[in-house]
Image (cartoon, rainbow, N blue to C red; front, side, top):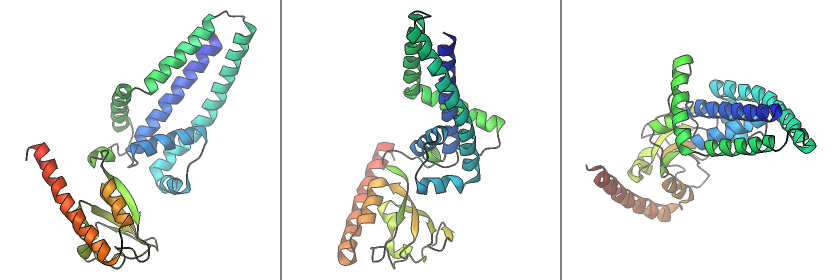
Length: 254
């Protein structure tokens, strides 16, 4: 029974640690799903993609969070596996009867229910956010919430290819804001970054744009044709955005 309880305690602490790390990563500017995946990957040692790893190691706070997760994960996984093996040995030997098996299955069911509960996630996230603001120097602001990221709005990236519709245009000529897309910054091929670029900024092939807007619109811009075809698609997108703005204002009562 002791081995079963030890396994459940270690598993509970592991889930709590990854949840705290997820909230902390969200407060550094990562999206919630990305932060959850990165926290679980670092804790389990599974690793992550090259692009996402650059976003982690290039940020000092995220790097410290992930390093802590790796350390704790190595200890937690070894402890959990040891406790689980002892539990299975006891159960297979039949020394403790059926109660350890019932406790193990019941504990796993409860943990699964709590881990998948949106209500628990919401309230636990608030408690963790308060604790981060109260006891750490982490800039504990949920940038996803500040940007009002929803299913249809969010921050995304777009890389300009040679000959794309945006290639060779200034921001004033592109008029992406008329399509409901804001350019927050531009990362140039040489590594330079232009934050809040002015309207006369020239867009070139190789530039990586940091955009805020509807995901479907950003995807359409990325696929947009060149020349007159792209101009017609741009005009249609501006008309559609006018309808979207009117509908949003009507829903907001403005």
